[in-house]
Length: 149
Image 1 (tube, helix red, strand yellow):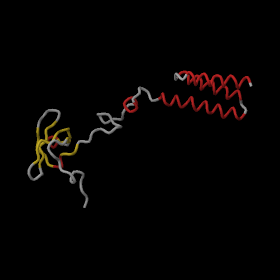
Image 2: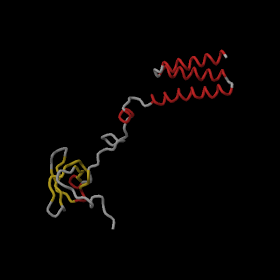
Image 3: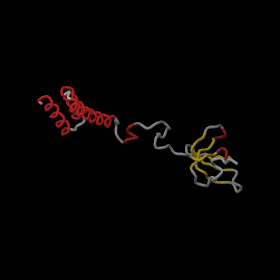
Image 4: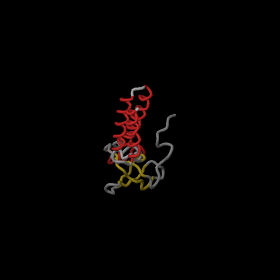
């Protein structure tokens, strides 16, 4: 026999719920104020206006707060909310210049020093834009050394 989500636990006084306001089909946040002796009726107090209403179990459901991937309105989180930064592209930019430098190293091994030097210069410029001066200097020196050899 299948059980509904609410059959394994009944509502208790103080539970945060959503209740079917005036049986109109719209659920609003509320708190269980009382439970009838037979457990068939639940009196809820709505958060928004403080009104109360007695409802059956079928018209009351547990309140499930927004998940970690949703805003209070139910939509997806912005990058700032999810990652704590204003723009998550910073990480992608960092990966981009590191990958470009690794590509330059591989191209240098094939003997194409001009192309490798150009890749190191591009990686150096991107690193500089990201504030990685030591890394930018290192790659700029590698680019110059490739052209001198």
